[in-house]
Structures are given as C-alpha cells and as structure tokens.
Length: 274
Image 1 (cartoon, rainbow, N blue to C red):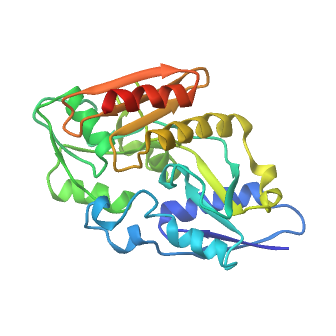
Image 2: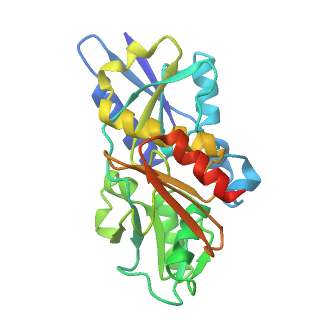
Image 3: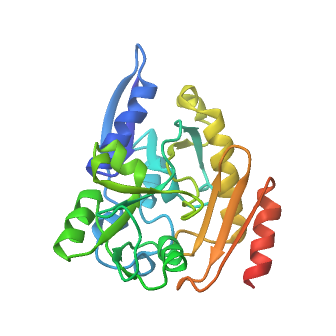
C-alpha cells in the first residue's frame, strides 16, 4: 500500500513528515512525500493578518488531501485552525515534544532589548514581562529568522523550542521560556496527522492518547474564545490543569485563568475581554 504524505517543503516540515512516516511504516506500507507550498510560504514578508487568518500554513495541504492528491497531511498542530475542516479529521497526534518558546541570541530578557517575533501572542507576553523591550516583526523559516536576526542586529528572537530541537539546532537556544513567563500557543510541540473523515484508521496506530487529550482541550478553549494565532491568546494543558490567557497586544494587561473545563475557562476569558 502506498501512503502519500503531504507537508510543507521547508527543512523543518520535511523533518516532521519523516517523523510521521517513521510512525506509519510497517511491512507492506510504502511512503511517498509530497511537498506543498502554502500561502504562508509564498509570502514571507507580510504580517500574517495581511495574508489571511490562522491556517495560512495548512489550507493548500488540506485542499490536496480533500482532492485525493495525498493520503495524510502532516502539520505543526499549532498552525491548524482551532476547529476541524469539514471532511477532514486529525487521525493521530504524535507524542508531544517541548511546548516551550525559546529565546535565541540571549539567555535572559533585559530592559531595552530588540527582540524579533511575528507572533502577537509572544509580543504581548514579552511586553508584559519587560515593557521597555522593542518587539520587531520577523518572518521566514527557522534558519531564515535566525539569519535575519543576526543581520538586523537584534538582541534575540523567539522561536518554538520544538522546531529548533527537531532541526538539531538546540545549541542556538539561550533560554527555554517557562510557561509561567510565556504561555505557549495551543497545540505547540505537537504534530497532527490529518486524514479524510472516515479514514482515521490509516494513522490510528501512531496516535498518542495523552497528547490528544491535552491538545484537544487547548484547541477547544481557543475555538470558544474565537481566536486564531493572530489574537493574543494562549493555552496550555500540563497534564493536570488547563491554563489560558487573553492579553492586550501591547502587553498592558494580561488575564490568565486555570481550571479543568476548557468551555468554562474560555467563557470566563471571553467575558473578561468584552
């Protein structure tokens, strides 16, 4: 049986696709990789809000899956919309890697630093931690952002620690930011294997139940708040408690709540933000 795996074409995306392939390989199964260019890949300069809503790195891959050009789509789960696309389902989540954000170029956040990130979630929490930092937009794949940060003379950039780990670039990390300082994006650190609805069995053997439990609680919370990756919203389930926050983009206020019920937690935060 041939299983065609669709993913973005960056080195990180292909590394992640190989992780998925390793979980799916068995006697009689042949794997083929199908790189797909997304809107987020084509436009690496515009802020995400000028390209589209959350999902700019997954839409074209989902279209290929729906059209039957690939059989499995591999996504960084944090890039997905907070609700499943009609006709598709997440058949498996691989065991989650490090959920934390990482500071590259420095080992501490200090007053007056210039820090690069295109994420409003990271921007809000950086400014709440240290209001005197200058947060500057920076786009591109992992290696490109590291290079741009150096070329522009930034003191640091913020990236997902898991991406650096997967690429063997962990030595670039100066500080892994504790969720108490910077709450991660919903589903950060997890890889999602998406299939056509009804074909979940194709990847079911790769599903990590505890990762699914935590990630689905995070995604449900974000879905109810009605936010995507453009909004200063963060959620993280540590295994016992779900934490979530909403914030002003300039970091002037952050409201953080924790609990067991993603619906109740989201409703509390929506009520606060209105």
